Length: 166
Image 1 (tube, rainbow, N blue to C red):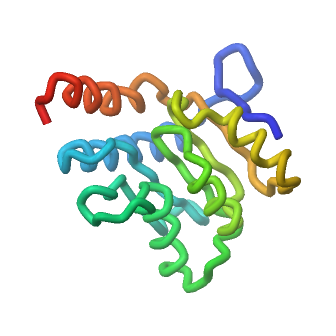
Image 2: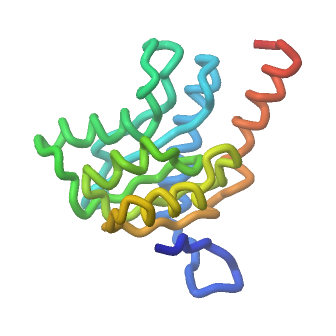
């Protein structure tokens, strides 16, 4: 499995649709930021419409699994009344962690788009995880959509934590 990075020099170009949905996810990350949660937002799309949204709510809900992706997937499954959310696309501001990637696989989401890399939970670790357990991936992953905008709130959040402004 390779992660395809959007760039001007490669054949993967960013469409207006990708930018629109990533901006939607960024707005959700802002909600998390305002709630003093780690600012990550996710939006789940099927057939061109929103079926699930989420932002990190681990602190608010006192739930370590309340990541943006998990919440969006739960909403999406309820919305379509099926735990298999085939042919859907998930837009996430920051690269998903292993827990979220496992949920994405179980939900059978077709494509995952994320903006900024997660330096603590890098995809390299995820790729090693897939190889070690011989898990076949069933989805495509793309990154680099509005990367700077996606990392804005997370950088600000941790800067405030270090300065104890939160």
